[in-house]
Amino acid sequence: MQNRQGGQDEEDRRGRKDPKNRRKILIVDDSPSSVAIMERVLGDTYHLAIATCGEEALEVAPIFAPDLILLDIMMPGIDGYETCRRLRTHPTLHHTKVIFVSGTDMVSDRLEAYAAGADDCLSKPFAPKELLAKVQVYLRLKGTEDALRQARDELEQRVQARTEELARINDTLRTEIAERR
Image (tube, rainbow, N blue to C red; front, side, top):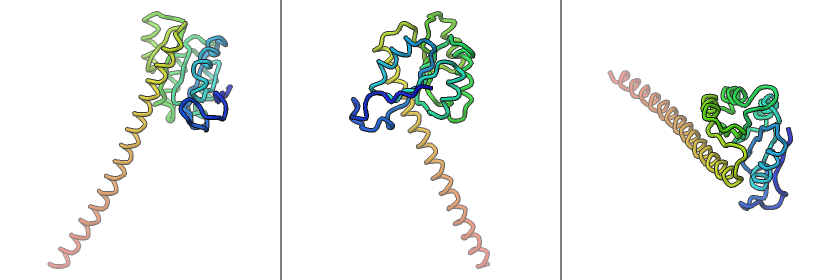
């Protein structure tokens, strides 16, 4: 895995000084030219990691914990479809956004990508501005989904605590009623 911080330790375009606080993107592609383009478009804004095959992506992803994965379809070893299926079964990665970036533009390939768990597809060659726009949309969506999951979990904890409190009050009242009889 190649780990790319993107930019210097100085402030990035969003005013954050610490590159460790940047959103994380895992690029999985065996084409050096495709990787170079994605790095040029995304490297100044996002914390990037690079994997050159599906097997490497499956090793790197749980450690790197990306917010988004840009995944090629045709690679040596396991292809992008199988890589995506396996990522979707991982307990900490199943909510990670996956965009297939592929040289194929056939509808059947895109449909197979969606069936494997892709959130979206982008055909090579792509317009850099379209790549950036899709990345921004899916990172915003992931942020919203993460916030909703967190709010749901906090609400469930509050409901559980309140339910336990009401059960204790109910037991106390039953005891008091029984003692008065």
